[in-house]
Image (cartoon, one colour):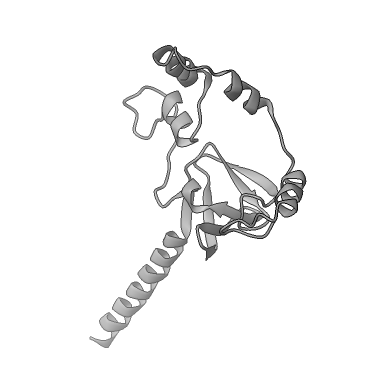
Length: 161
């Protein structure tokens, strides 16, 4: 009887340990999750983590998660993560776990050429010239931080400028 009880306890502890580890693992649900050096959109991007990659959450700070994947670590916004395991598979639409081009674009919270073309066709009265100009603009993080500091602007959360 004692042997059965001991096995039950060991089994329960193993189950708890496995569950705790699984709870810390999450999947990237955007096209390119950005690992930053601090919990802020103003933090420097250390690396990109592709859609579907698994990460281990080590810490939380507001809406930010400190994660590791392989030998990389950094901060990523919680909205870029999901507890669900994402399975990518090539093939026909009826294959479990496939994602079409539009679903991947939506998951990446952005347009691709096909989705943009369809949107433009449905919204012909919209002038996209400024959108096109803004897409070509690039501002380095250091310049943005200097701008915020000069204007005495402090983000509500996620770090100091």
